[in-house]
Amino acid sequence: MQSNTTLPADHFLYLTDKTWDADDRQSQCLALLEARPTTEDEARNIIRTAHNRHEREWRRFKQSFAQLVYEPAANNATQKPSQIEQCLSSIPPEQAELVKMHVLDGLSLRDIAQQLKIPRETLRRRYLKATKALRQSAVGQYRP
Image (cartoon, rainbow, N blue to C red; front, side, top):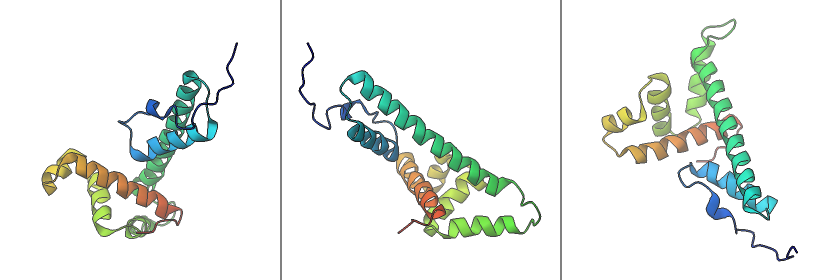
């Protein structure tokens, strides 16, 4: 016999993985709250789906940014630097410098952290914030 008891909306939030970044966890939590799963298996499937969706979006962003950075423009080679500068100028200068060091110069976050003499985890959070700002500025939503 099935019980008709309704679980609290946040009952399965403990299943979200705390090692993933904040945006990913937030999308998982929202998906759980919207879907209101009734079993742990359903909750795990919702979390996995939300995580996969977040990862796909992140890969698409990285690919589009890499194309902008590494592929020459079709007809005009001078267009590439202006497009890159336009993207990076839409975010705060400290964040733009961090993205340049990691993406354009090819430095690892560990190397950048050592160079700037700050903890690696602090740098990782700053980089995530910078990439989030870059993604939002790409769609015109960034507000510092």
